[in-house]
Image (cartoon, rainbow, N blue to C red):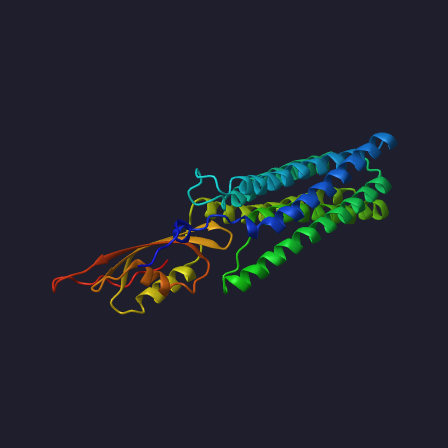
Length: 321
């Protein structure tokens, strides 16, 4: 008689090993951004430059947004084994990404309003100081983007190695990356507008570039909101996963899946509940073995129903949306 330890039958709900690199890189970016913010605000007061002060406080908004991402990582890690979270804390990173996406929308809205005000009521610009600030901000954000993208690239590579062709994405890391890219885009547009204003007298370019940036940032943030809300609302993550599950189980011609639920537990890890009907019921472990190659399934529950007698008609093949 075989004996098994309790741990052998438990599902692993600790998903934080896949996001530790993202947390480390986000922490580095937060430190870099805070240092830049303090330097710009200090220099602004020291030299009496409103341009430096404005950009310093603008950096502060990104510190707050990146802080949301960092808090999400830390909260998920500290509560990884908290029994209150039935399926672990994998979705906390998606929640962090969702909150960051909302702040991106707010930043874009404020940019758009300010740009319209500047277009209607142009203000004098201290071009040399403003260009210096924009270049400094661009350098800091490019370094930050490089740090965050490195973590994202490693995460995608990890997904490709361990989960076949299902690439997953840390939405929290993506949100932090979009914040610094949005800031870098703002700096680039500002540099273009400031040079146009300094050398050609096109003061209106500053406001126009602000509106262009607001539109682009809004598009990025809406895409992030769509992706993270799908995870939070347990939308079916991929029709391809459903098809692979159905094909694997129904390759035994007597099996029919009558109910199938798939949802994302964490980046690259999915939960699935399967109800199947068969004339020859077998142990659930047999059916789990059929889908063993789908490595992205982190929590599998299978209900087997016997279909007995000549009057038992097998249901049609499961349709996967």
